[in-house]
Amino acid sequence: MSQSKVLDLALRLWPEARDNGAVSAPTALDELLVSLGQPGAPGYDCGLQSTFACFAPDEDATLSLPTGELSSSDAEARFIGHVLVTRTLLAAGLHVDQRVITAMADAYAFSWGMRPGSRDLSPLALASTLWLIALDPLSLSDRPLSMSWSVPCFDDPERWETDYRLFSHYDIGERAMDWAVFSSGTPERREGCSIWTIVEPLIRLDADNRVRIALVAFSDASDVGAGVASATAMLERGRIATLLRGSLGLGARNTGPSLG
Image (cartoon, rainbow, N blue to C red; front, side):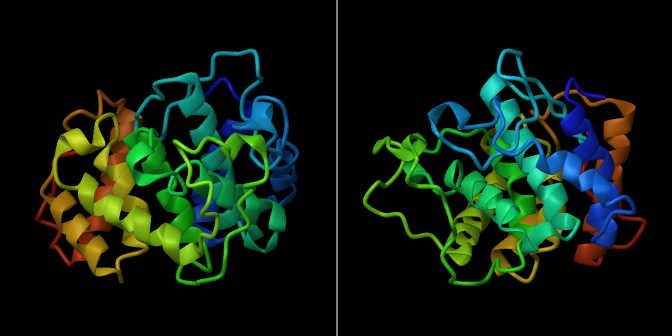
C-alpha cells in the first residue's frame, strides 16, 4: 500500500483493466476521475486542470512501482502517479472520455512534448508513459493531440518549443520508440528504472522494428542500477519476463535476462 488512496485504487484496478480491457466494478473508476484537476496534481499550481492528483499538495509525495522502483522526488512521484491513474482509465475503456484523453495528452506534453535536449524527466518517469502509448487507440494516427498549451505551465521556451505546438499521436510515439531503443543500449541510460517497466508496454508495440530491436537487447540485459526489489516485485518482474520470452518466441528453458 502507498500513502495515496487514489494511487492504491489505480494499482488495484490495473491488473484487471490491463488483462481484460474492463473492470468488474466500473463505479470505482469514478473515484479516480474525481481526483482530476485537484490541488497536488502535476501542473495545478501553474494553471493545469487536466491531471490527476494522487497526493495532497502539502505532503512529500513518494511511490513504489509494482516492479520495485522508488520515486526519487516529490515532482517525479506526482507525475508518475498521474500516469498510473491515466493508464488504468485508458485500459478500462475510458479512451472515449475526453477528460482521459486530455490527461494522456498532457502527460505527453510533460515528457515527449519537451524539447529533446531539455527533457529533464528521469528514465523511470519516461518509461511510465510507454503504457499510455501502448493503450492509445490512435497511437498511429496523425490526429493532433489536445495538449493544454495555453496554460502558463508550458511557457518556458527552454523546455518547450513555444513556436511549435502541434503534435500528433504518431509524433509522440515516434519520440518514445526512439528513446526505448536508446534506453536498451546501456544500464546508464535507464538508471533507476527496471528493464521490466520498459519491456511490458513495448511488447504490445512490437510491430515496430525499433521495438523489436529494443526487446531483443533487453532479453540479454540485467537490472543493474534498478535498485533492490522485494519478493513481490521480483514476482512481477518474473511475470513480465515470461511475456517477453513468449513475445520473442524463446523456449521455456531459456531463462532470459537476469531479474536482479
